[in-house]
Structures are given as C-alpha cells and as structure tokens.
Amino acid sequence: MTAISLTVNGAAHELDVPPRMLLSDLLRDELGLTGTKIGCAMGACGACTVLVDDEPVRSCLMFAVQAHRRSVRTVEDLASPDGDLHPLQTALREHHGLQCGYCTPGMLMTITPLLESGQPLEPDAVREAIAGNLCRCTGYETIVDAVVEASRR
Amino acid sequence: MKPSAFEYLAPESCDEALAALAEHGDDAAVLAGGQSLIPMMNLRIAAPPVVIDIMRIGELRTIDRGEDWIEIGAGIRMAQAERESGVPLIERALQHVGHSAIRNAGTVCGSIAHADPAAELPAVLLALDGEVVLRSARGRRTVAADEFFNSYFTTAREPDELVVAVRIPATRRRVAFLEVTPRLGGSTGEFATVAVAAAAGRDDAGHLTSVSLAFAGVAERAIRAREAEAILVGAEPTRDAIADAAERAAGETDPPADVHAGPEYRRRLVRALTRRALEELASP
Image 1 (cartoon, rainbow over the protein chains, first blue to last red):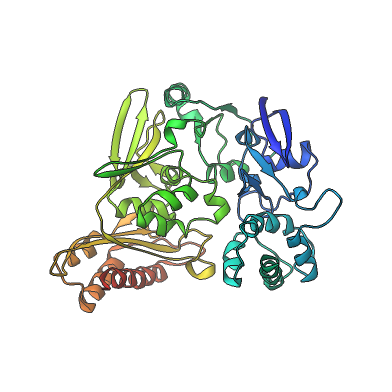
Image 2 (image 1 turned 45 degrees about the horizontal axis):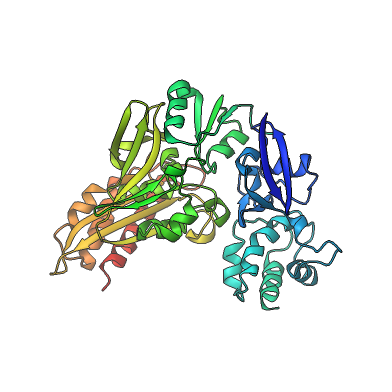
C-alpha cells in the first residue's frame, strides 16, 4: 500500500491505496463518487474523464498514486449543493443531449473547462472537443447544440 | 482493479531513478504520462513487477533551448509541448495525437520510447534529424533517431537506461504534417493508417537544400524515404519533381496489411500524402 494525499471536489483525502488501483476505481469504489463511469478502460471512450489540476484526463489511464498532491474534480462537483444544475447540465437536459447517460459525466468534464473560459463556442469547436468522447445514443448533434447554447448564456 | 500488482517507486531525482533501473532492469517499466503503458497494463499485455514513476523528477520537466538544439525533457507532457516547444513540426503533429485528454497526460518522450510504428512523434523526430538522450548509472549517451527505433515497440534503449530527453536541431526549415486515420479523416484521435512528416530548406534560388520525408504506419518502425528525398535535393520543387518523388516514396515503402488497410492502399496514401506535403512545402 502507498500513502497518498489528494483533493477531490475540494475535500482533502489521506488514503492508503494499492499502487495498481486506477484513479477511476479510487473515485468510485473508495470515495463512492459513482458519477464517473468506466467504459473501455483503455482510453478510447472518454466516459471516465475527470479534471486533474483543472485539465481533462482519463481516470482509467491514471493510477491513484499519480494523483498524489493533485486536485481532482468530478461530475459530482458541477451541480450546486442545493441541487441546482450547472448551466451545461441544464442545457443538455433541455436539448435531449443524453439518453442512457453513460457518456454524460465524461462529456461534462471534457467540456466544462472550455465553458469556464467564457468564450462562445462554435459547433465545429465543440465537435473537435468531444471527438474523444463516444456516445452511442444521441448521434452527438443534440450534445453539440446544448454546448453551443450553454456557451452563449 | 485491472492491472496486476506491482511495486511502485516514485523517485524525486534522476540519480534515484537510474539506481532503481540499474537494480530492476527488465523487471521495471518506466511510467511517465501512462497513456501507452496503462492501457497495456489494463489489458495485461504488460505486467511489470516494478513501475518507476518519473513524473516527480523536477529536472526532467524542462524544455531547454540552446543555440543549436531544443531539448524536451521526459517530464514534458504533450499538451505543454503543443503550447511551448517552439518546434513547428511537433506542434503540427501533436494535433493528431490522441485526444486532448490524452495529450494532457501523455509525454513527448514517452511516445518516442514506446516506439509505436503508427505513432506520429517517432516520424517527427526522424524527419527533424533528432536525437534521443539516454542516461543510466553507467553514463549518458545520445542516439540518432534513425538508430534509436528498431522495430515494433523496440528501441536501442538498454533495460537500465532512461530516456531523459529528445534533442531537436534548431535549424529553421518549412514543415508539413499530414495524416489519414480510420476515423475522422485525419483529425485527432487515432493512430495513423499513414502519416507523413516532412521538412525542407530552400536556397535563394528556390532550390531545395535539404528534404526529410518520414512516415508512420508503413513499416515496423518510423522510416525515411531516402530515395525520394534524394530526387528533390538541389532541385526546383516543380509539379513533375514532386510527382516523381511521391512515386518513388510509394515505391520504396513496403507497408504491412492490417485490419485498417492493405499494402496497396497504404502505398497510395504514401503517394498522395507525399505529394500534398511537398506541395505545401513548395508553396510561396
């Protein structure tokens, strides 16, 4: 076991973890943050994307020990504590930008840093941004519509 | 937990890492960004007993600019190199590597050390006449890119050596990078079916002074099309000269067949991408 300290959604954690534990497993199994989904576990689908030090990374392609002294943000951090959705979540709901919802946390965490930059996003930029996030339900167009609108609010 | 168990070492200095590599050698895998190693461990294609994480080593997280060389340290992630390397061909090629989330974690040197024959950066290093800087407890050496890549995922690195940097000559040449992938027509996301990394210098008369044509996806390692290059050096980059060189490049490659493409289609891609890359280099 290896001792690590990290911040997840603003809360500090001190943990002993086996080195082979993936960050995605730490989040889901140890911290109970099951919003982060595991799809392919080889970096291809994007479902497990979280922010590490404010940048999107694949939590299935990172050992928990690599998150030592770093700051992780997951989908659970987007809505406010009283349940008000993040504007991006609201836009996805209004535009039917999800059906089964499995890809949604990864989509949200990929797009959030772009939205927080405050720039209006064009559809092509959104398509490029989510090229690494697979969705098998929506055909993507409703997701693109939602993100473009959220970026203009 | 998908990977098999391993002993985790996280040295904070290069010397510490080299001592660990000297002790464990072939039993150790070097972990940098992990974007190649961890998928392999998740699939248990790789099951190293020891993993040496080099990302806590401050001295590897540097981009050094000398008069003649730019040196990108093993701790530099692709996203940072995309913003800060100042090497146009690396910046161009990185737009085709993985997705942004992969580039936020993966390193430039990691891709070089991994030596996937369909990866972009080995072809880039080869096109730029770059070198790989290796250190071990025994000393330090530099290996030219052409000598470094051996075959599929194998390089000249000895088990006790660490790739500490790649060195790229600071010469200014025009560059082009073009790629065809199974999805998205050559945009981000996938390994190359075929990619070309090209660089060329011009003299005052408009003749080409040096030409590099390097390819990913056409052999067991990144390769140069030396015969095609030779056609162009000293020549005016006319439409005919470009067509000749593209034809020669296709002729001198012997691409493999896989699920994405057969040899004949890959050769057609070599021809077309070489022509387009040279046209870009020759444009005013």
